[in-house]
Each structure stands twice: as structure tokens, then as C-alpha cells.
Image (tube, rainbow, N blue to C red; front, side):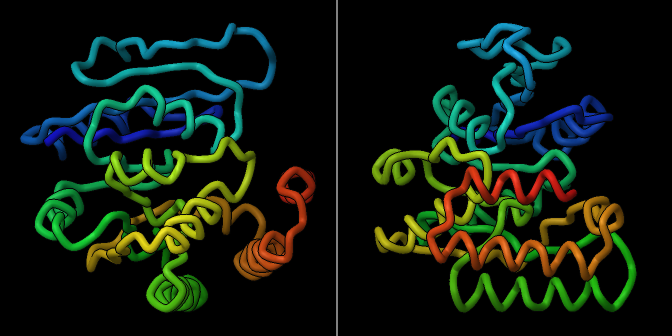
Length: 232
């Protein structure tokens, strides 16, 4: 069974080291990794095919206009795997996580992992706890929890929407509406604390929650995108 990991990036430093670690973790699996590198201007030109990355087997690279949902949607269009994994560039992924997915293959259509923020402190642990409750009760994980979905199920419900923000929330809500089976893994998705460190833990958490409430209330994603990035 082939797995496709799709990694959207934008001015990401150290992506080659991350890919090398990933290939080591996944060496016994049938996989491909598609790196979708976002850019601002119309130069370089939009690429329509995936090209080999740094000569590494099974690793591909494509340049596309930035926007996580836009980049993920393009990666999905090029993916060959029966399982799609949407991995943030600042989030680790291990063979234990993939083995857990396969061990529970018959019991889910889509899923995610529990969040683990790479850093010490009570506030991080509180965030992780509330994220766990949100994921368990409302089946609403975010992208930094490494969302995964069977490719035939994603195709059936209409793929990822090319949104500049909240593409993960939109997808999770649509999966629920389509009565797809959700699986929350016992394993953690360990993500960098850099965005919390940059803007402050409380400020970042309150801002994310406020934007989510506005999104669920029907505010246009384009407006929320401007609010999110203009105030970072």
C-alpha cells in the first residue's frame, strides 16, 4: 500500500534535513513525499508536474502559489498513494505513527494525531489538553496534528479546497457531514513551538480561537487571512 506525504512549505529553512530524517523513518514502507513550495510572485512559473528533489528516491518537489490549502490541493492532484498524509514542515513524523494508521486501517476513513508542542511549560500542556478535547469531542483536529485520509474517501467528498486559511477545518467539517469515520491516534504529532514563541502563547491561542469562531460564524476566509497575517 502506497503512502503519499504532502508537505507545504514557504521560505522553510532546513527542509532537506527534515526530508532525510523522514526517509529514514519510512524506509521500509512504500511511499512518496511531495514538497509543495509556495512563492509570492508569478516568477518562477507555476509547475504542473512533480520533479525529483535533491536526487532522493521517491521525493518530489513542485513550486506553486503560496497558501497552505492551495499548496495541499495541488499536492493531492499529483499524489499516487492510497493514503494521504498532510504534514506541516515544522512537525515531525515517525514510523510508529504510520504503523498505527495501518494497524487501524479498517476502522477509519480519516484521522489525526494528538498534539504535542515541542517545549516545556504549563501553558503548552494546557493547550495540548484542550486540543485533545476538541479533537475527541468535536472531531476537529487542526493541520499541526498531521491529518491523514484515505485517497478514495477524499476524492469522493471533493478533495481539499484551495483556501488560504482554515483548509484543515473546512475539510474536517466536510468529513463529518459526509459521515466519514474518524480516528484519533494514541500517538502524538510533535510540532515546533516557534509560532507560540514568536507572538506569545496566550496571544497566539486567543487569536487562533477568535479566528476560528469568526470562520464558523461565516466570515470570509480571505478577510480572516488578512487578519491573521497582517497581525503576526
